[in-house]
Image 1 (cartoon, rainbow, N blue to C red):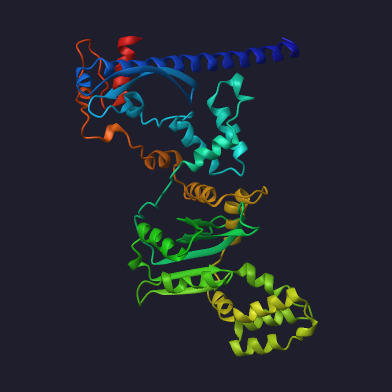
Image 2 (tube, rainbow, N blue to C red):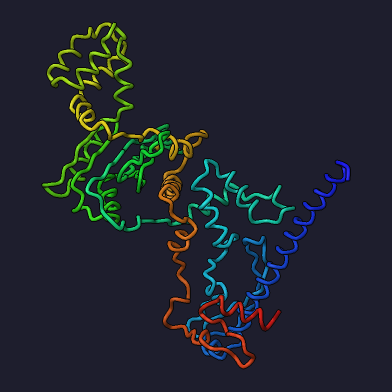
Length: 439
């Protein structure tokens, strides 16, 4: 073969898989449609149904699924007692009314949105993954549809219970300001904390934080809510020492009192090395002044450090330098406490940059507060290593007739004389029997 033949053969290979993918997709759509309509007919012909409701109409419904769009027929019933209408098949499968995208697609949207900075990209990604190869290059879910799906979710998650509770916990905290829509130019302050048990320094390039737990909050009582999550994960009465780290903001330092649960527990605040160095290096580089201040903070008493800092002529400082000079004076105790524990490092600036800024402010845009809260919950579930698809189904409570004690579903426990299950509670069993009987 020459080169042209090889290229032609590769194109044949591509066409083979595209054709197979399209054929399997159509076969899956046909199979699912047949199963859905068979389940609907099974209930329609059951004697129990006639005691409760009668047939009102037969309508089609189109939903967008993992295998593309599926249109199927299902029966609408009217109850004999109160004349209310319902669709049994929709209730059985937990499909809310009027939704275009099925729950699996909606869970995939939430999963993609947890690690994307654009709803447009989410629509393109999910559309590409859930349509045939021929259609995926052009099809996308609209941004408004993605937004509606996310706003309709109610994701709540708590950390899994730790097998062991460490005697020492490390907590880093910082905030990020995110633009809001219609907020007169003001941004929303998002408080963010990460708790971990220890640092693995076996990798010389970058230490790894072990057993991390991420938490964000936009409302009041940040530390109280964070403490609730820590209490769900650990037996906090076994934690003897807590080291709180950050840039020295008043809301961060206020966590010392809230995190301390009993008298013997020790909670200490340490200033972040990054902010200390940033403030120190802005001072005038007058000879060895910066070196002398750093040495004094490490080895001298607080009054001696204050005396050295006060020896700097304030009239020679710019406003930015003056602010950092005052910052050092305010946090002398926190800095010296930081030097007391040289092995404790804070990487909160990197966490803010990678986990929040890269998603919510890397592309200029503004959010409504409800939408921001939804996206933050999805993002934290992703950062904590949880399955967002599973969380979607665990937190979706669809109030249907299935939960009603008035409705008799005993037909789901039997098989008919033809040998296949009549809508067994385990739908996998029902489907397998349908395949055996029908196909």
